[in-house]
Amino acid sequence: ILIKMATTSRKVSETPVEPGADEDGVFAKRKRSHYRRTQADSFIGFLVHFLLMCFNVYIGVYEAGVIKTLKARGEHIKAFPGIETYGSRWKYFTYINLWLQLVYFFLGFFVDIMPRSFVKIKLRDIQDALFSSLVFPASIFVAVTFWGLYGYNRDFIYPAELDKYIPQLLNHYWHTTIVVTVLIELLLVYHKYPSLMTSVSIIFVASTAYVIWIVNVFQQAKRWPYPFLGHLPPLGLAGFFFGCFLSVLGIYFIGKQIAKYRFGEIELYKEEESVAKKED
Image (cartoon, rainbow, N blue to C red):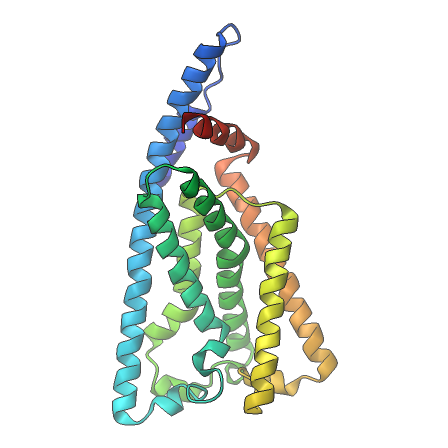
């Protein structure tokens, strides 16, 4: 239903302007067109961000309940071996990604309820860059990497011993539903992708920062966050990290092509954004 609403609104907005119309008539038609498209998109975006924000909050509450129960039994160390070592759970990319999603959907909801202003436009640009360059690629990467290693040899990433303490539902919240949430966002909410240089820079900086972080964790705790990293030689580690960067970059391009196929050429929206600034 939401996709049909968005598609219908865009068909209205893409109605060509008659060649003989005067300047005021052209601007008036574009103004009405922009208004209709924005109303539909704003409602869809608000609904998606609100529901997914609530869902991520629920995951956090459910996870906190599981950890509380494990602590009461004295089993939280077995379930989360690195929880009391250097870096706690922040050394795990899955955990960082969960917080990244939560922050993003909170930001999206906050921007949706803001009144129209120049600040809202800038925050929307930040939101678009955050989703296109970090949230979507990171979430897909986490799911593909986890389930790929899990299928090959689960002891590399999630030993069978953990099934005794961590519910399967929570495992899917961590590594499966993250794909569903970002696909919903990608297909229902339009995002203006930043320049290629900006996106690559964001991905490179974020990837490099995480690699530096887990190397520091290894030096402090004398163990890698993920056991399989300990089986790789230095050159193999470098190759693995570089391969991960290329994978995330590839996922970014896939997301961009899906968005382009779903919403059309980006240039169409640049013109409408200029109309919005004139209205303000």
